[in-house]
Length: 146
Image (cartoon, rainbow, N blue to C red):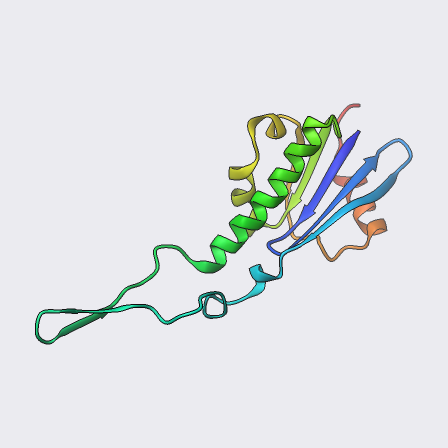
């Protein structure tokens, strides 16, 4: 059984891909709207301020970008779902179609056993494709022996 993950920073669709019957079946859809928000919309307060000496002032800046944290959280959610499916023997091969901005982050969260099942890793944002368009894309871009 082949699993296809089509994801960007705020949406993910997981499909079963029957290559022989040329059929895609949507089995799960994940949404993470916080990944679309700007940093100012994600942080509740202004940055803290400090005084250094009599006349010097400054502002603390956050160590991490709030939007990147949200994207990382969403990547972890996808990775956890895939790991759970692997434990349940839910797939033998995995095709990842992930936007370039999400690619490295998702790879960091996937465990080594899931990564070993990846047969194709495509760095494109194809989340807007309809199922029949995605099926055509898979048939053209995933050439590997059965």
